[in-house]
Image (cartoon, rainbow, N blue to C red; front, side):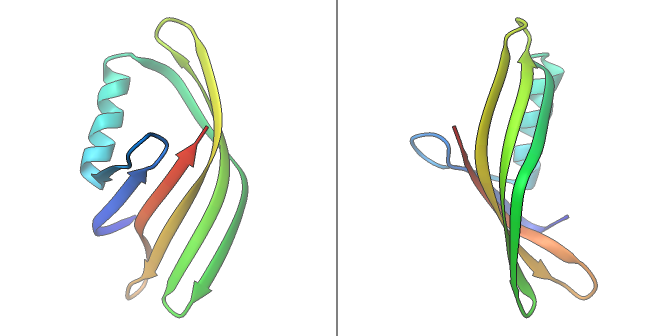
Length: 101
């Protein structure tokens, strides 16, 4: 799904949080294992893709909802931008950057 060295950038805070794919996945898995988040859902609201040759960018707006360990529900909206490249047979994500409310 990601190229080697792919990056995920959470720019929702004061400073961007930049992680590699393994670090990002590990942090999310730890959150679920500890039980801090009981449910989590992301719904794509809209998207647009632009491509040129073997490169593309996909912009999406999303809504997310979930339930925390203490039973509190949360919801937010945001936008995420994927930069993709086409290798020999498959398209892969080079990076993803997002911001949310």
